[in-house]
Length: 154
Ligand SMILES: CC(C)(COP(=O)(O)OP(=O)(O)OC[C@H]1O[C@@H](n2cnc3c(N)ncnc32)[C@H](O)[C@@H]1OP(=O)(O)O)[C@@H](O)C(=O)NCCC(=O)NCCS
Image: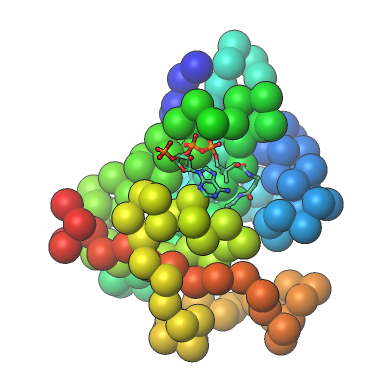
């Protein structure tokens, strides 16, 4: 298995993987167009030509980035792949000089294991709510917000 930046040909498999879990209510759905537009945000884990996992780091502002769409295929879970993807996103944020990373998720315990801490959603800057207006759940967001401070954590 190989973790690397996504290529454009990975987009359709990432779309399937994310939306499989979105259909079960475990994460938010992504449009294929959104994946293409943000392809440089994504990391994938490939087994030969199959994309078995993906995650994205999206820059929100000068001091803030978001980890999105962490998805590991069911037959590849519990092998440390999700953790490796989150670590890759954190490293990219660090390399970019971004001190704080946040996520909105239904799986807070997974992120807590990786050093994230829960915060009140309203503590996040308004800038990050940009895409929430397009969410079918808006304004009744039931995801949990967590943050990771790279300066303190690394
Ligand atoms: C959540 C998810 C990304 C975890 O991926 P994974 O590859 O199975 O996770 P890892 O094997 O890297 O686990 C890392 C650690 O987190 C723990 N963990 C994994 N999933 C967890 C969960 N749902 N709740 C609590 N802890 C969890 C593991 O036990 C492991 O801990 P350990 O190091 O003490 O053994 C994966 O289950 C998934 O894709 N789920 C569906 C999509 C989803 O819910 N994404 C959430 C982010 S939006």
